[in-house]
Image 1 (cartoon, rainbow, N blue to C red):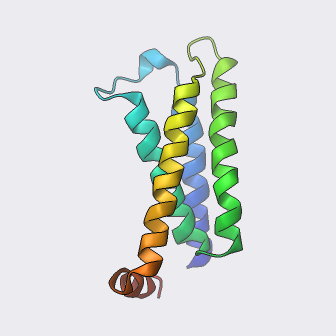
Image 2: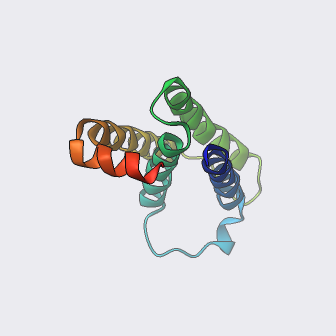
Image 3: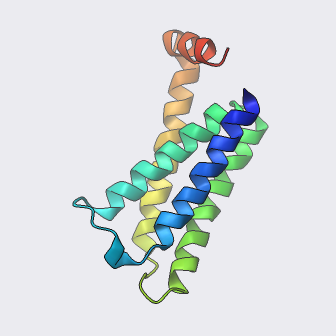
Length: 121
């Protein structure tokens, strides 16, 4: 089951890169892209915790996710239709921080810990 979770995490990374590098005119979303950045990186941290557990691998994934976001922004600067944005990096960082806080709350909550443990069996 662990390999399935880790595979889903890496599929998510690939999909994030794909959608982040699509030409801007091919994406028509009616909400702020900063909200999307925040949500996508919060989900990425939660998927990482689900994939790797809350151990050293998970803690290693946090700076990886941060630098992944910066890498995506740099890659956007090399496309003709996308532009990098420091505010996107800020939104990503807030999403990472909130995701990490959610993971910490889940660890401290007896009810949520039981739920997470039951779903991992």
